[in-house]
Image (cartoon, rainbow, N blue to C red; front, side):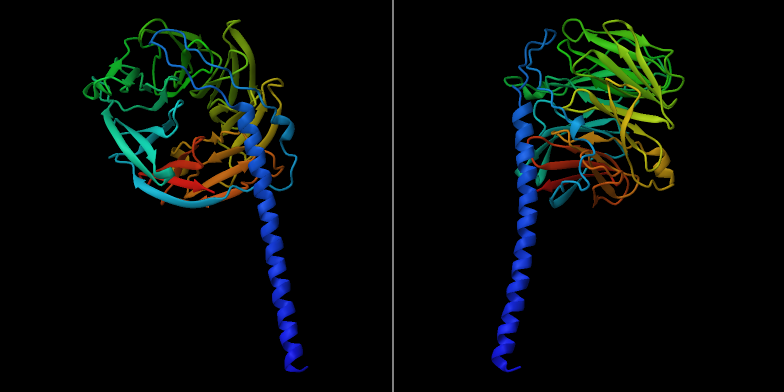
Length: 418
C-alpha cells in the first residue's frame, strides 16, 4: 500500500471516528431535548400563582396546582432519563453539633433553613446561580427550661415563620415559632421566637412536623407517644391542638403528611403501619402494614394520588403507593445499605423533584442516589459521590437547577445541574 493510499485510509478512519462521535453526541442531545421538553410541559401544567400573603391569622388565598397523572408513566421505560450534574460546592453548616433538619422556603426556595443539635436555626440564601450561599441569620431556638434542640423544622406556607418541634418528656415547650423579617419591618426585630403553651404530646421525641396542603392553615405532628396531633390556626399565632388518633399506631410515629385532593392525614411508624386518617369524617380511612418499619411519608408534588413511604429494609427503602388503592404497592426502589452504627442511627429523608419524576435520597455513606419513577428497575438510576460522611437530606430546588444536601460531615453541599 503506497503512501497516498495509507493517507486516504487514515482520513477515512478519522472521518468514521468523527461521525461516530457526532452520532453519539446527537443521541445525547436528543435525550436532553426530550427531557427538557418533558420538564417544560410539566412546569407549564403545574405552574401556579405564588401564595398571596395576608395578615396573620386570616385565611390564605391560593390557586391549587393542576393534578398531573404520573402513575400511568411509572415503570414504562427500561432506561432512566439522566440527570446531568455540572459541579458540586461545599460550605460549612456553621453548626457546632450534628445537623438535624434542612427545609426549603415554600415561597422562595432560594431561602432555606438548617437546624442542629446545638439548638441553632440558620437561615441561608442561595446566590451566584447556585454556586454560593449566604448565612443571613442564626437564631438560638433551645427551649427555655431544658435547653432542648429542635428535632424537626417546617416553614409556614406564607414563608414568614419557621416552626420547630421538640421533646415531650418534660414540662418544657413542644412547639416554637421563629419570626422572619418582612418588608418594612425593623431588621432588629427579626427572628424573634415564641414558644407555644399547649403540650399535647405525652412523652418522647416529637419526630416530625408537616403543614397540610389545604386552604385552612394547619400542621400535623407525630411523636414517640404513638399520637398524631392536628394544630389549627385560630387567630394571630393562636394554634389549637387536636388529637387525631392515639391508638392506630403501636409504636412511635416517624412521619406525617397530608394529601392534596382530600383531607387525609398520612402517618407512618416503626410498627410498620401506614395509616390514612380522614379529618372531615373524623375516622380512620385505611391502615396498611408492610414488612419493615416506616420512617417517613411524602406525597408527590404533581400527582395527588401518589405518595412515597421510606422503609428500613435494605434494597427496598422506597415504596410507592396510590391513595386510591391504599394497600397496593405500585413499585419499590432501593440500594444496598451498609451495616454501620451511622446507618442504624442516621435518619435519611427522601425528597421528590419539582416535576414529581425523580426521588432524591442520601445514604449512610457518601452517596446521593437518584431514582427515576418512569424506569422499571429497582436500583438507583444515578449515584453521585458527595461529602465525607453519611448524607441525611437532599432537596431539589424548583427555581434553580440545583440540589442541596446536608451531611454528618457538618457541611452543606450545592450540586449544580446542567
